[in-house]
Length: 309
Image (cartoon, rainbow, N blue to C red; front, side):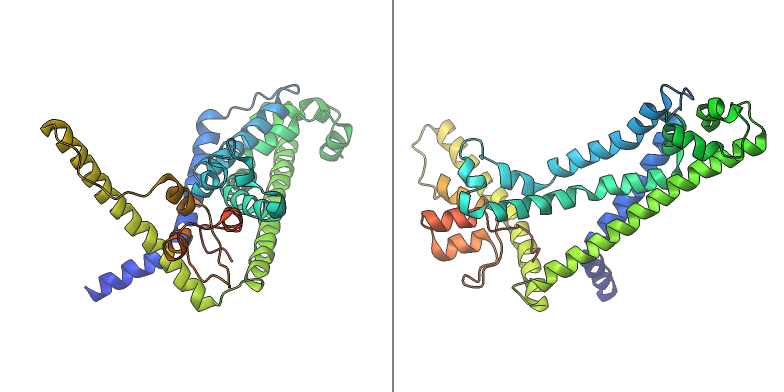
């Protein structure tokens, strides 16, 4: 039993790493299925570039949109902003609003970057797209020391249908694939460096210690878990009370329930403040009750709902 609990604890502690690893596996599998089943390069000078670029970038764009759509912080940030724009970006706190949006964007970009890296390392989409470029410099780059037919046959190389010799055809494919893989490696290196710099900068400016940060993360996870349990319990009680009142034709019993303002307060995103050592908007509301107008406006912007400090 102790060994089982140790294994479970390990996976819970490493769930972010496991999640990203699972996402990477899905990306690799999706790219292979996409390239083998759906992708058929037209091998036409007028269509290769647009067709290859569409297959390279369209899935990345869809993953980016899904990253925004499935992130709960996106909806916490923008929910109700059309009715009350000041709730999103008050004039004095626009930098905080931009900071939170950047954090959401960085999280949403993980899957698209994975897709681009995998697709470029494979090279299929890039080969098709670049072979159809109508640019003299690109054509000269690939057809140097090749026959004159290379310039006209280049778009047919990805399909293996060119009239070039087998050696020239293989050389061109290797050049296209090498460029694609080099570009994929460059994206991986640049992303890694930017991630390292961003993480170091964030940690250097942290308002809390490493141990307190671990406690904060534990608290946030437990609060979310218990909130869902309590929400189900109270929803069941409220539904049972309403149904009982309806069928028995009796006045409903008094039922304590948070008002609209309370829901608004605990739904805001939040970050740690040294002057107010609370770990969530729920704790802040419980400890202080309804804040005044200035406090409410600051809470709505000076936030992240996960301990990204």
